[in-house]
Length: 414
Image (cartoon, rainbow, N blue to C red; front, side):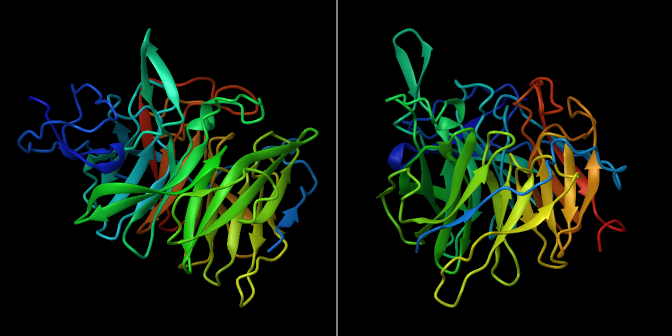
């Protein structure tokens, strides 16, 4: 079957397809299209069944030195093998108002590939939703004399305005502490959505060296910044907060930025906070990747953030990447990126291992460096990042195919 694209050129250097057939199609450059061909039938990818900021200091004992946890409750199964023509590094999920899930694909495993966002329908049809707008501060040489401005879509969430807020982190490749004058700083973007389609983009904030996740609450945009500064051997990270209607805010990218509501100190693995999520009472949970902890921040009636308090830590959790709050039972589901594990953390901070496995290519559904987890019905859907090999991670190398895993919670988590 012939595989066909349909693109529409948009403002801000965007190019978004209305439909796509993934197999046998070459990646498209991240630039506006000139022509708009006729629509084509979409062939889905089949899915398998299945004020001054507060400061948080690390707690002891070391999760890294602790023994491995007890046997997991179940094992992950295959949800989908992603089309390698378009996704070699999946990252974060966002639930769309119309019922689809969106998946950001920064494609860090191949710097020359366009950065994309996929859509996953309730029937598990997977389609290309959009090619992410280029970041002008990031230039990769793909061949002598030619350059391509790229980007790095990571955390995403829809706002009450119906638009999609996305972290752009092109600096994931580079060392933010190198002093490189050409370091590619990241952004927070607002993708304007009309009739379920992206039609433009606006910059909310820029000049962030390593933004990671984004959540929206009560008219504010909350952003995790994983590698803001260094203090000796410790990494300093932070949570930033911007008004929902913010435009073109240039942050100073220092611990003194007025947009910061809390900073965190990481001493074990040199990577700071990562996933964030809100609880039913408005509390903010913040995952400290490198220290393997989750902190909790509360807010007073004026919106002032409290001192972060340790909420969860234990030998079951070496690191945590994406985290997701289950509004029905008050539990948090966390991705232990380094141990290939998905964790359940109850409302009191008790940790259980839901699923865990060793090094794998993920084609049987096994976890392959889980980066993001979301809940659909009673199933957890997990993206497998599969791009950071070596200690302390179980993962030994990047595999040819990227996968999504699924875990059925029925009878396992109340």
